[in-house]
Length: 401
Image (cartoon, rainbow, N blue to C red):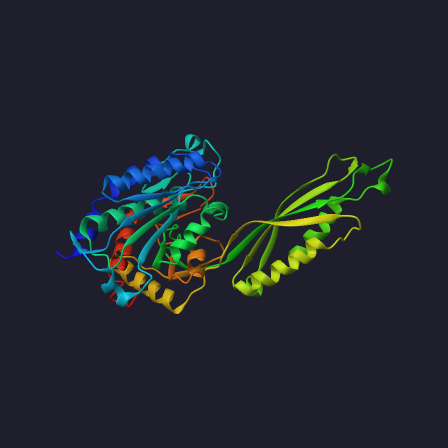
């Protein structure tokens, strides 16, 4: 039996074990700001991998979940190690990276309110698709290659803890890993169509704070300087930067300000979501936002802009297209019809692509309605998607990757 047959046959027997790991993971709190909960999920992953002989390095993070690196050494078969000098013509970027994030967007206690359930082949629960099923899938793929060998280069499972808020602490680890990556598979959920993501927008998440001057709105109105009035003017100017034809959108999605209804507002704040496709557009629009924030539409106001988080765009390259075509063919061998989609959403895959690593995203099990109480996972997609990725890894050499 070939190594590919051994791995895919073994994965075919693992759905029950996958679901057991997924249930435990979904029922563990893990919002982005819940470091203890995200690290508890990390401890589950670490114990699972180490229990199968896979060493795991913990990269501590101060405020958010630690990063984990699980490593499987390349071998041509069980117990047969290969020499790095023979891999891919001596390509310096040797690691095959399987990536995923452990954090969710949900508040503490959400798993207690609606724990993991399965009904008619559909699983529900906080983070079930985005992206705990992808984490479980990566865990089992790592174990499959640990058991049977066959990978053309070392595998590295990267499990981060703060993607949902722009990876403020995970980004440096992701980028450092990407510099060594031969290819990157990001196991975000497969689209409801069953497709994968071959392009994503980049995003910048920023906050602007405005300072005005308080005054009684009836007895001393003229002495006040309204920060809320300035906020309104800035919002109008920022939203006007939207250019749908170029894929540029601006949304001030959160606002706050004021002291009382009968006080001219001494302070106000707006939070901006910028999405773009091409990196030069990011620089252009951010420059214009800085100009808007720096301008006083109402004399006497002051404002400052702070970038809170950022994602890079995922743009197709000749090599990433080759990786997609390879995955498409291996998915077909698992009985799946897969196309590439563009997504306006952001992900860590943008960071790896920006580092020059051929990247494909949303190769995880199929699901939908992420970030909502209706989030779901198609249970029957877990094994075929795992098999598709395993086949793609095994066939990297023949595809010239």
